[in-house]
Length: 235
Image (cartoon, rainbow, N blue to C red; front, top):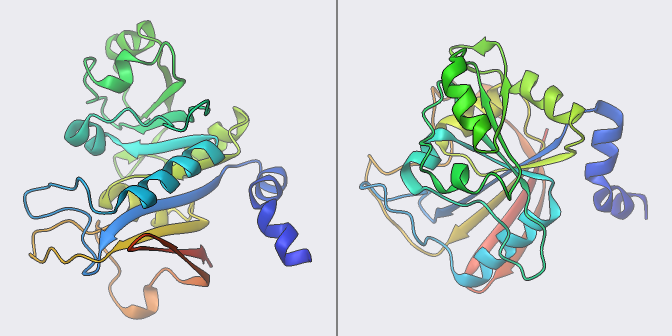
């Protein structure tokens, strides 16, 4: 039963051998690959059963990570809504410290562990976040943004063994590009949005030719009501 045991212990085995978190990219999309309509509306793509399973993932993994764009658009709490559950550590990738001090995440940082990752050197702004209970991790810039590989090393040093990445298309592409993603949880809803301006799960520059694609393997399929969850390993 080696394969079964490896799957049960995938987070521990990865963390103990690399010292960095096991990263799971999660997104929900329509049958035509959209995570929002052309107006940016995204609530809700999947049904209640699928969303419940997302909260089970938030309970399973040590931390949840998003980009500042998600905070500005949705003002999320990023907590686990399972009764008697544990909230994951919240990690915001905010290269230039644009997270509003009035956001739900900052206002609740005294009670829910919150890390802001940045490459900003604005000591005054950093101080304002720290006053409100946020921990601020600074990395050197990578193409003007947070260095994700460096961030993973720092998180590993903080004993964070796993991260659920719920970012938008730009952060997701950067995460693939820097090679930090180990697994994907892709929820597919039986809906079609259409529209060339509608958002997709992975944006950024994209690859130039099919041979440059990020490759996936070991698919696993589950059903939650009318929604489908496909899990893949990243090669």
